[in-house]
Image 1 (tube, rainbow over the protein chains, first blue to last red):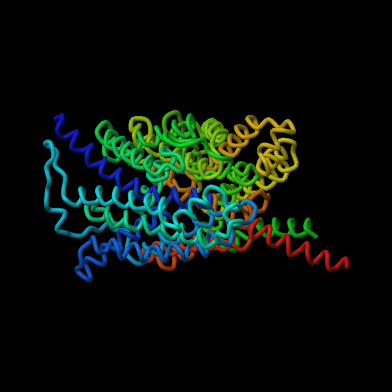
Image 2 (cartoon, chains in turn cyan, yellow):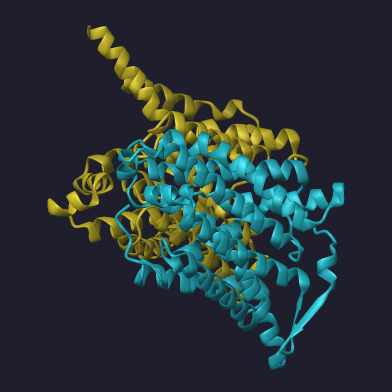
Length: 296
Length: 317
C-alpha cells in the first residue's frame, strides 16, 4: 500500500504533464479554430521537438531551453511547409475539412516512419542540469525540469493569448477564425493567415516537445501518438475558442491520468482518460468550457 | 467491356496460384485480406462518410471471439466466424450510436479512443483473454480453418474478397445504401427528406463492423497467434482506411485497387530490407495517401473513371 504522500506526489507529476498537454493542445485548437483543419501529425511534430532537443544537447552541448527557441523556429518552418503541401491545396475544395484529416494522416505516418528509419525505435533520453535538482513545496517534491516545463508552458500559453488579443496579426487571425468570408472582405489575406496560424500551432507543439524531453525519458519515433490523443482530448474538453479552458482541461487530463496510474497500473493509466473522454464527447460535444460547436 | 475485364481478372485470380511460390502466395493472401477489410470499412467510412479510425477494434474482437470459442469450447471457426461477426457488429452499433453525436474529426477521435479501450480491456481481462501474452492457436486442419499451404488461404480470402465486391455492388444500389450515401452528402438534407439517420448510421456501422469481425477470424486463422497490442493497434486502423481511400472510397473496387497498390510493395520492401529499415514500408503508405488525397480526390478508382469518361466523351464527339 502506498502512503497518501506518494499518491499526491504522483498526481502532481501528472498534473505537470497536463500543463504541457495544454500547450500542445493550444496549437491544435488554433489550427482547428482558424481553418477547421485537423492536424493529425501534431503529436509527431511534438516528437520532432523532442528529438531537436536531444540532438542539440548531445551534439552542440547547449542548454535545452535554448533548444526550445531553435525548435520553435525549425518546427514553425516545417509547419509552414506541411501546410503548403497538405492543407492549402485541399482546404477550400468541397469536403476539404475531411480531406485535411486524411492528408495530415499521411504526413503523420510519413514523419513516424522517417524518424524510425533515421533514429531506430529504441527510446532515448539525455542528461541535463534541471533533471537532478529537486524543489519541495508543501511536502511535494518535483524536479526543476518539471517545474520549468510547467511554468514555461503556462507562460507560452499566456503569451499566445496576449499575441492574439493585442497584435495586428493576432487580431487578423481571430477575424479569420470568426468569419473567413468577412475577413476577406475587409482585406485580410486569408490564405496567408492560415499559413501563419498553422506554422505557429506546429511551433508550439515543437516547444512542448522540448519541454517534455527535459524530464520524460521516452524520446522515440512513436512517442507522438499518445500526445496526439491527449491533446485532442484536452481540446475537446476545453471546447473551442477557450484559451484558458485549455489550461484547466490540461490539468484535469493530467490528474485523471495520475488517478488512472494509481488505480490501475501504469500501462493502463489511459483507461480512465479514454472513458471520460468518450462520455464527455457523447454528452457534451461542445466541451466543458466551450460554446456550442458550429456545424462543421 | 467492363464485364469481360472482370471475368478475365477472376479467371486470372483463380488460375494463377499453382504457378506461384509460397512467399508470393502469402503476399497475395495478405493483399486480399486487406482488400476485404478495406471494403468492410468502406460501408461506413466510404459510403457513409463516417471516417472511422478504430476498425482494428472490430478486427480484434472478431479474432478473439472465434479463437476463444475454439480454445475453450472447441467450436470450429466455420461457425465461430459468424459469432465473431455478431460480436463485432454489436460493438459497431455502439460506434454508430456515437456517430450520431460526433461529426468529422470528432468521430474519428471517438473511434480511436474506442479502439484503445478495446485493446486495454483485452489486455486487462487476463483471465478470459490471456492478457498481454495473447493466445497461440496450435491446431491444423481443414475444420479449424488452418491450412499447411498458403494456396488454401488464398482461395478462402479470394472468396471473401469476391463476396465483398458483390456485396458492395448490391449495397450501393439498395435503398439502404442510397440512404447512407445521401446522408454522407448532406446529413440535414437527408433527414429532411425522411431518411432515418439514426437507423442508417447505427446499422451502417454495425454492418461494417460485422464484416470486419469476420475478417478478424480469417486473420487469426492465418497468423495463428493473436495479441491485443499486435492486433488492435492504430496502424492497422489507419492502414484499413488508407487502403480504401487510396483505392477510392465509396466504390466497390476501391479496396481491391488500394490493396493491390499498397500491400505487395510494402511487403516486398519489408522482405528486402528486413528489420533494418523498419519504417520504409510504412513511409510508402503515408506518402501515397498524401499524394492521392491532395491530387486525386475520389482515389485512384475515381481518377481512372474520370479519365475513361473524358475519353468516351471525346469518342462520341
